[in-house]
Length: 132
Image (cartoon, rainbow, N blue to C red; front, top):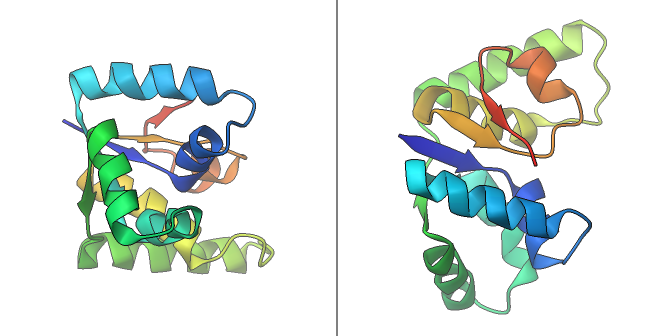
């Protein structure tokens, strides 16, 4: 089993935001049941929080998370879902990277740990979410 982790969760933890403790507990519990993975989009989104790649890799290793690239199948799903979102009048508030993270989780993992602001559930209803 795989648990994909969104940058919203990791940045909440790294920045000590409200709910960071609950997220950390959720990831620890999730790691007992599944391999934690971050896709390339999440890796890029969290990288500015670290002075070096080695520092980021070390933190991910301590969390028990590994890097996993987005597959072409997941990329296709992201693009098609984004097209439906824009055709339905969805604003540019959410861009392709948001859809890539969700599509990666839906195609290549079993669940996504994310702070959902509504669009994951709306546009990826088959994707199980872990929320804290």
